[in-house]
Image (spheres, rainbow, N blue to C red):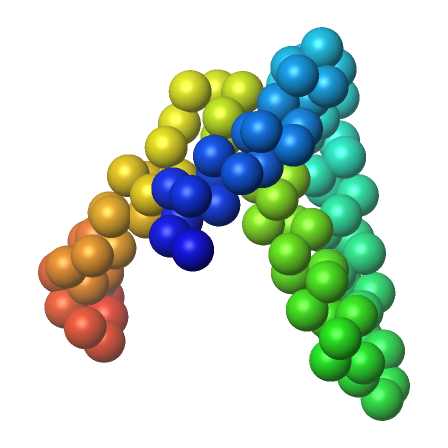
Length: 94
Ligand SMILES: [Zn+2]
């Protein structure tokens, strides 16, 4: 699945509901998911399946926010296609 396909899939599943909720509230849900990822990262021992799920959730909420704001995640990600956006090097030499 490409980043664009992922964003389209998340839109198909959630766009209507997220659109009704609006950007400010959806952003708070995103931050809450980031908090859940933080908790999962801090857990000892780490549960790789739970970590995987939390990464998926954070990515999904980020994606839906991008959709609500008219941003293509694939296009945004292309900023890093040729290395560090500031120094254009891989690895970064800033
Ligand atoms: Zn750099």
